[in-house]
Image (cartoon, rainbow, N blue to C red; front, side, top):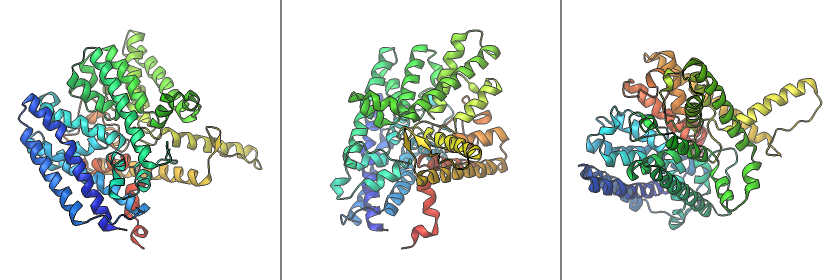
Amino acid sequence: MQITLILNILGFLYLFLAFTMISPLIVSLIYRDGCSGAFLYSLAVTALSGAILYRTFPSKKKELSHRDGFSIVTLGWSTTAFFGSLPFLFSGSINSLTNAYFETMSGFTTTGATICLSIEQLPQSILFWRGFIQWLGGMGIILFSIAILPLLGVGGMELYKAEVPGPTPDKIKPRITETARTLWKVYLLISALEVFLLCAGGMNLFDALCHTFTTLATGGFSTKSTSIEYFHSPYFETVFIVFMLVAGINFSFHYRLLLGNLKAFWRSSELRFFLFVFLIASLIIAVNLRFNLFNSLFSSLRYASFQVASILTTTGYSSKNFGEWPVLSQYLLLLLMFIGGCTGSTGGSIKCFRIMLLLRQGYRELYRLIHPHAVVPVKLSGKSVSPEIMESVWGFFFLYILLFAICSLIMTLLGLDLITAISSVAACIGNVGPGLAAVGPAENYYHLPMLGKWLLTLCMLLGRLEIYTVIVLFIPEFWKK
């Protein structure tokens, strides 16, 4: 493993992060909210740290190995969350390192779990920063940096594999740098469209920007304590549903759609499965709400479809306090936390790709009990899935459930009730945000014990980097030559 090269790239990453702090600094100066000094200090500390690493450990222009890629991605996410927390601390918006780091990791990993008690009272630049770090994390700070890595003479494919560790990373173009730039162009284009539609509906530009940041990132941070419920607008909710679903779909599909390749967009069985789950879950919950909570079918469909889109895509917005919904509806939303969006999207959790493969593998085993000598390959989108991919999927699923069980157990040992413990871990490792009971949409994570916050912070990181990228660093063989 090339320690010098890793530190050099981390230094460059901190310099880039310092550059991104200029935007909230400008917002602070515009609104005169008193946080410009906090962002200046944060920018200076981050830039100085990055410059020291970048200059002290010059790049020798060597190709990255897979070990280097895993190390850079994990260390990059862990340490940028620290530097990203500095504006919260220097401005006094958050009173402790634990809470500030929790909030920042929640932002960068697009989880959306918050410890802020009164969001409306936060300065505008801090609200902007909360949304902006989710937008950056949505496509990935590391992935964004890949577009600039050629300046360092460093290859980017290993970083891309570690940053997008799905079963089959989808290279849109032959060169990884072009892929990164293409994905970001699509990301920017869709973001601009959502800002326009929100402003056209009467939302002010500041709120439109902040909510666009957190919609496309499937992050869920809002500028309002009551989230989207604050606006009480079917129009806004419809816009958010559309763009949450867009964000939950593989972004390479959007690129192909923009090129007019409709067949590639609808040929994906994963996409069809994703939309099928959304429709079925929305209908079941709508019926449950109609007969138990609302007198109107329209209201039932309105709130059910919004909440299903929000939880399935792991965005975490709320248009109603679903913690007060019937048990069946809450249970279905909890199950959706384990499914997530499509691979190549900004969503988290297990992902539809893996869920589909597990279901088809299960069906194949049942079929082979009836026809022992039949050769039945597992297929996806008309193509046979290799045994290596199936082994990877089963390994990921086992680790995901194991970590969920262990972390839930620890949370109960810390004194949390069962529903709070289970849903908080499910919400954080799935990068969803709000859970149930004491961490429901009308509550937050502020009251949790400090050890619980650090554990959930780790869950966010594991979920965002899809477990393997982080866990592999703790395998002794990883450090052997």
